[in-house]
Length: 163
Image (cartoon, rainbow, N blue to C red; front, side, top):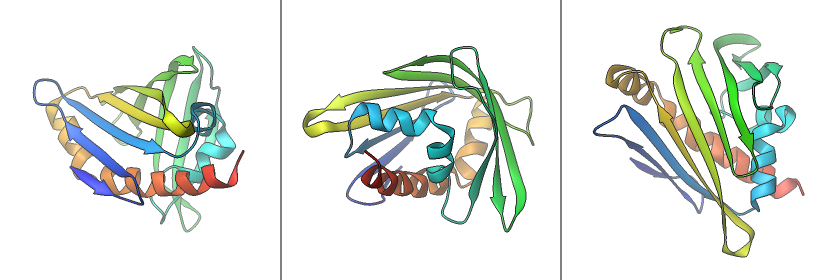
């Protein structure tokens, strides 16, 4: 599945031999700025998710061995909550777990790679290994593509404002 959200295309693909979801997207900003948008809780909350939701950070210890928790907010009310652990934070990648509170047995392992491109651009590749094909398909059918795509449009705008 590919969607064009601005001048960049977001590619979302499901693995055929493993229950994975791979998201690839380029940004017009250097790796350090894109990485910071993923690790700074104030910045992260500004771009994550669809336009119709806000993100409220409830816990954020962004370091190897740290943990996180946030909720998606609509009209002042939490409609979904997520939590996980940061397994590795490096300048070129983040490895973390991801769990939806409504399905606590469905832990996914996500690796986000930050690759430097020419002209101070960055390609991110997020690979999420889900616990089962059913869990993966549930994520894909949940509107995840809208949240990812709209979130990346918000991240484009944020990267254009921050230095």
